[in-house]
Length: 205
Image (cartoon, rainbow, N blue to C red):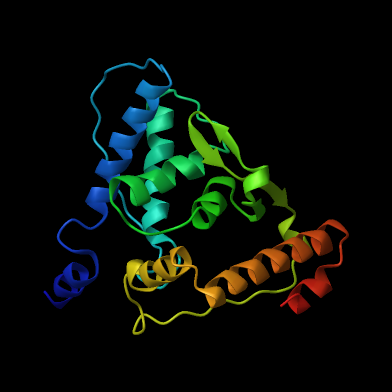
């Protein structure tokens, strides 16, 4: 009973079910917008996840990506790889009004280590959706990386993302400066990986 109380506190009364339903809705809308015909057979869908909850490991988008892949396979619909992260983001940001970005979705779609460039001049419109430039990088080029998290300190993602997004939209100079620095670190790390200078990646901060 205590686990149910905690689950409702973190995810409300809908939990992952709303993510699945919203993904199906957005997939159907995508097919209609792009004139994609598919069969009309019935299906049932259920999910199970081992991603730790509320610790910033993209558990929600993981459910969405998994549902999207299942729908693509069941309906035999091909969605360009570059479009899938944007479609997944539209489920949360557009359909469910949950703040988030493309980064988690890109990694989950491409898998492994991915360089992402979201600069406006390099983005493109595909199937009616804005997509960045994504490039897979050999994961073996990275030095050893460790990840730690705490269930006790966990909280819903919107608690952190919502105020940050609001501050960015309001032109907060600290937030804009931080985002610019992250982008520069990203480019330097990509350059180090491309030149097989993995040992320099950890010092790009």
